[in-house]
Image 1 (cartoon, helix red, strand yellow):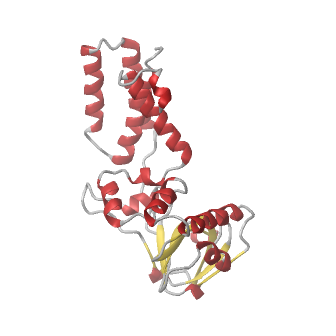
Image 2 (tube, rainbow, N blue to C red):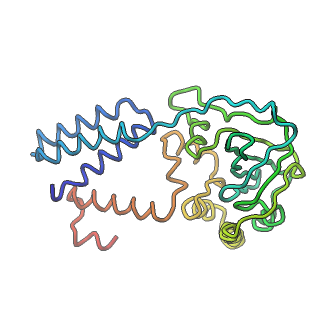
Image 3 (spheres, helix red, strand yellow):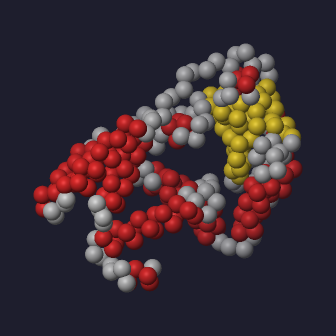
Length: 276
């Protein structure tokens, strides 16, 4: 198997892609590809079998995302309580954050959104003044009519916003009309790291162009909220939205995979790949 393990890694990645995208043509493509390697390229029998086993195993091992059952919120009197999970996303148009619901609402997670009348001048000042920071306990004055499930796609190739949020364990969304509806207190100590993130984004806004800041916030900070609509639709059309919101470690992994394919495909030599 020496020198052939990356084939098992490729089939494992294909299995993950198949489970997440439901692309019914993908298993057939993988099988035909392996058969072609065996017939035309003298692919050894052992890595051939292990590659097939890897694809089949991870296809059944990786769980599918199931839609949560419809939950009724009529029992809510006038408010929703929970704690903020992660960093708030702030753009010129809106602010949003993930709220982990309390035990009184079955630990349901919400996406809370507020649309600005005027853009916030500073992200750091806005989240600090409102305590919209990680771990803060929040009470949102709302009614059950304001709690709704995210919209789902109607076409097979259309971006499924509901499925996208379910991958983040978010089941419902709340759109508030006034910031006075939210009262947050007692953020956790870890929130200072998230506050530093907003301060760095403010720093970049004041020194670089909007286009540069857009790509930096997407790749470095995992925030694609500044992405313009045509570019975002292009990524969604090709099911590549995750690429514009990845961490530095994932970028390193992608570069390593690309270099591996270049070397194994005899496109570059082991000596020349050091230039990359």
